[in-house]
Length: 444
Image 1 (cartoon, helix red, strand yellow):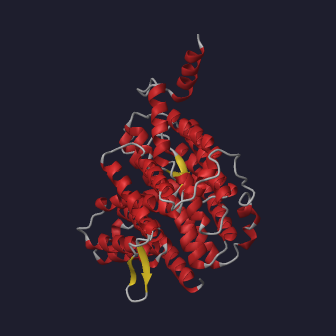
Image 2 (cartoon, helix red, strand yellow):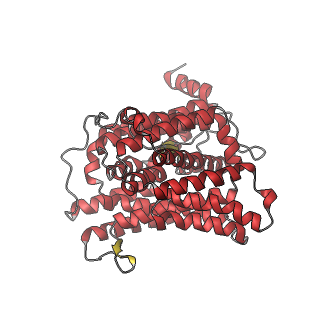
């Protein structure tokens, strides 16, 4: 038996590739496709968390390692072609709602992430997560995803210079005489055209094209090097753990709960959607969902210690699934690529906010697609869903939007005579979010 056959035998033993109707070559290509589709997070995450005052180099390393760790766990624990990395919705909440909005130091906010990740692991092990997820109405899950999408898109429009603050109208269109604004427009057009043509890795290609134009036009400075040693995580490693004693107020515990709630629903919805696409669902249930959720929660805990916001299953995994990825080997390849990417941190200097802004806008558009699944014909459902969606960008706070939806849903359902359709968990969440809304509004 030659080396190639031994490798195939190893992969088959772990991932059952032939049994699932795939090949090592197909799984490898699927992994590369997924990585290229989601590689933008390596540069967007440091940009977003950098706005909170965190060291971008350290965040870059934490992002790559936590993503690789999550992908490896997904590969060997659950054997699914689903990649994991720090989520855009969570980092946006961390920076813009908690650190900037509430004025909480990022070190203390990271301690909140550590605590929420510990709770997250516990409720995953005891399968409480699955119970609560099942109790949340489908329409509210969709509204939450859409609302976070609008919030992310709003942040992208703002950072790209397309939307600016205005004393008379609150917001207004940005100046089109600013060259960097046109850089954002260019990147957005490129990504939109490529995605419309269904080109794999459209977002990553769009980032490269935008960066190249910025370099040629002199709007972005050339990096001094491309490959370098791995940036130190010293500025962020263990900071959350060191600051656990600072989680000592109702405001901070409310932040912990919001982190928990956002992460709670993020991966679950993505997992179900991807499993449906790949044909894994059996009797409306996802096999090995417990192992998949465990991989997610374990990577979230690791990321909180390394110095990044909660991880989540990535919808970009659908790109790899579309080209034939069916096993954990796909996730293994994605994880390996994240490890390799650790040596390319100098590229962070050329990935400016104008380069990442189009990414935020497009990801927001993709997340907003869940709006189509909401039952808008029923007013009692439309009201909480709508206020949850618009509440996030209009209050510039993801937690407020979530609270609006969960508070109003039981009220409107009771008024419509549909009391029996509201489970006990939803009544508990009603009072939980009433308390959170009070704390976030009064104590910030």
